[in-house]
Amino acid sequence: MSLSNSMANARVHLTVAEARALGEAAMRGAGYDADDARLLTDHVLDAALCGYEYSGLPKLLNVVDAADFGLPRRPITTLRESGPTAVIDGGNNTGMVVAARVAQTVIDRAQAHGLAIVSLANTWMTGRSAYYCEMIARAGLVVIHTVASPPSVAPFGGTSPALGTNPIAFGFPTEGDPLVIDMGTSAFMGTDLQFRDRMGIPIPEGVALGPDGRPTTDAHVARQGTLLPFGGKEGGYKGFGLALAMDALGALTFGLRPESGVSGYLFIAFKPDLFLPLDEYRREVTRRIDTIKANPPQEGVAEIRIPGERAYRTRARLLQEGIEIDLKIHQALQRLAEGHLDHGG
Image (cartoon, rainbow, N blue to C red; front, side, top):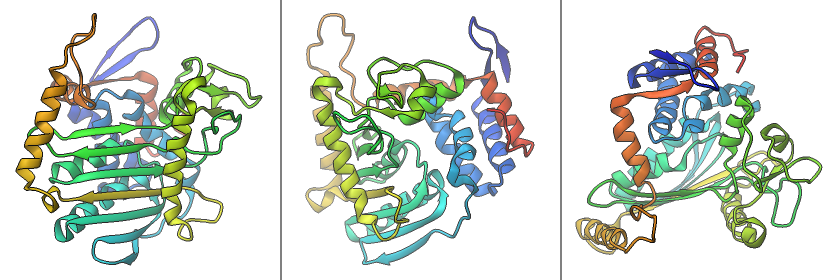
């Protein structure tokens, strides 16, 4: 571990091993057992290695700050199943733990039956959908993952939260790293908003309204108000439409979740060899990616970049170099590791 200073905040450099040890210690200090602490840390560390600092180690502080963190937890339970399908109750366990285990269930069912459709509710904060889609695509499956999360985004033309940030993600096996596409339907990510509120960093213009319905760049004010759907004033109906579609898929868990809740998650995965041999499918997707990357770039554009490509490159580099986090985040995680839930973060 090393400490550096900049004009703004002190930064702490951690090797991957140091970051993993800190995260796992913090989660054990928060009351998680060793297996759950490992799953939580693996998720956020991967996000940090892919270049998403706000979804990295700071997200562990979001876990213990969440209202659901203090509520009773039950075992993860499969309520209904029919070979390729399952309905799973997360038991109010943290989403990054539950979804990792459900993703393995999706892989097992799809490998056994050719197809898997699994819905999930009664969990919270599942993190980056790309994490699960990469995991499933590396098993040789095509996957679609949808999320309906608690209201934090206004409908197109509205001024108060009605829908979640509601991401949709895809994973496709290729001859190399999987093609993973992960996109939220809000103009700004909720985790990044929480990170900026914690750090006192403003948000861009045009992505949020305060509780008075007026635009704001203050992250704290925005958290009291609402985010907006992606697309801006002219195209926000596109983000709104996608968010509504995710909400409708999440409704498949109605009756499983609390009556006042709206969160619901869906995984759809299948074996490409239901249609053609897996190796042929991998080659064809790779060929299409190569063709797209060969497209003549516009002036000032260095290369055509495929979704997920930057994250893979960043991960390869940071696995060797380690990561940096803000000193304030490091100190808060250390306090958690010591068993202080009032981590001061």
